[in-house]
Length: 372
Image (cartoon, rainbow, N blue to C red; front, side, top):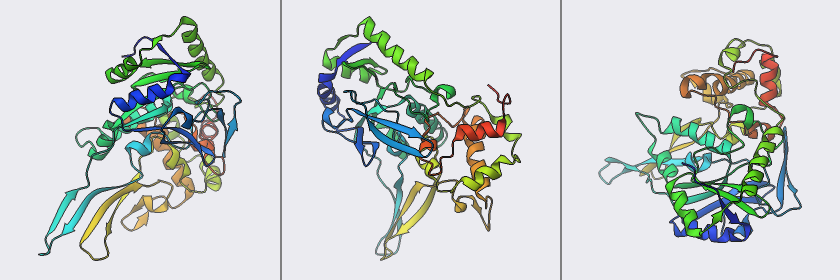
């Protein structure tokens, strides 16, 4: 569902936050400018939002800038997406305890999470969330830890009107407009926001505010800014299904070239909103009375991630990069029916040596070899 557009004046943002709290969302996360980046943190008032802050992103480059105007969502994205809120970087899955007789008991780690509203979600992040939900919530064994975190969230999307130089969501079909998956969606204008609801609970929150309908001019301006955000994207992937084209080039010499540049640091997988590799380990307490079974993020760029029994499947960096790229852009079509890339460009900006996934794919495929 998407309701008729309403207009939320800028000076009623605090009333909007209050309506979220009154609807049961004890914690509100929103974008804040901290430590040189836009990151999602707990906010108390609209004054915590990054008013007048923009971002400048290039391969291996991320800097905050001053915009000189009063908008607070005039930036593309930061290093975080929704992933840390649903797929925790490190969490206890279960706990094992030994009683006085030496018997072991296994206990759940607990699945209750604080109801949380998240403001400023981008279209690419919603697309990534849908992919992760297919992975973690698919039958027959949905992940209860992921499900509990996801159920605790209310999502307020903001259509992107200021994409970075590294963005290419238009070519993957995932942005810059949030089409679905949100509870409330906002388009930011100078004087306020054009607001629509995507769910019943989103509609109920907007109804609390008694907002007037958005004018035709406000709606047209919001649409025009989204269209402009599409046109200004200069990067792209040469097709949305590259499976056959990449599989035909597994021995291409360009893998050696990118392997020499890649540091195997794992930054790209950490900031990628769809990557879900993880490792599990047991962490015992020193007295031997109990242990926690932990899950934490891992990366296919680490050597040990490909360890099988007594050997490494991917000893060289070029093989790890090939695994990452062909998994994300090729074999995900077999697993999830689409590419694993949503065009957010985070892997480009946060790569310390500026490796650009769109440029590497172009080098591998040349021109005219992609599939639609």
